[in-house]
Length: 446
Image (cartoon, rainbow, N blue to C red):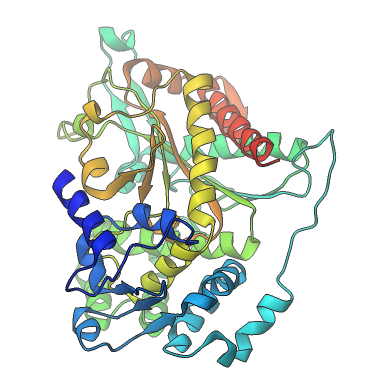
């Protein structure tokens, strides 16, 4: 892996037969972003950085070889295109990407209006409410409130009673923890003057406004047909989902991706200044050792991490919408600011929760195979559905390991309330860590 990264850097620095002419200069608006976006050199089949600093995108390696440009950004218009992509919705940005081709920006008058009058949030200064005027979106990860459904979703903890647990069986699910944390965080943000949007405000209700069971029985066929009509799935996959797939496959391969897409759309419609995506972790190697009843043993491992956009792998620019998202992340400040925000949140996880940042010795395959360390302990670029599709500044947080021997016992205690959810005081501490990370981010920007 180290060799691959060195090889990729050499490609970008010195140019190769695959037409990457030069690494952008340090003064380039996208030089810093590039090193966190490209995980594997196969991505270079999809774009070229010219000697003049311009960028050309291609649908595939064949088109690149034949110089069939899909979208070209000329060097003199890079900053204007970056501004444009900062204000366009993802759907409008995709239309721009498709229409741009070899044309100059000035020849696309339909998009120039966004540069003349870009939408902006009012600047409100209030020493008593320092977050006044800030729009903050919170996404509580996962969906299922009941344990039986959480097992279908695959997001739960079950540990048998033992001496390690104080002879008490432990059972809880991540979706209730994330929603409780989101509610507790929202309360603190609103008190400070922020406007808050929670994507999933009710336990067990997904982004299509129903429980999975309700959706499965009433809306499944219509949703599948809508996804076919929109071109997001093909008829072969639709037939499989409707006629052959198990309930678990339907949940994991269809229901969850649709749910995530709608989350991103609703967040982008809100136009937040910051987005907080709340998750709790499980130590992967321990999770894989569950027994046939889904029980696992508690582990001594505990760590925190945060994810930001980036780390695209070789096959992850296959879709045109992903190439459009890559262009936005390459040219705009979204990635740089997300790293700064996530650094502050990770530091608060360490200080407020006493949980160390994840380290190489923790042996997590997804960090090695799918992530790029940003240079700040525990902060990784990772090409997840939400990190790729949500515009603006974001932090995807994994505050602690739920299966840690101490954390699991603590999280199992439901001593406080977050609305109608009885939850652990540890969730309140996690909410406070996110809150202080947000405050610190804005304080450091002054």
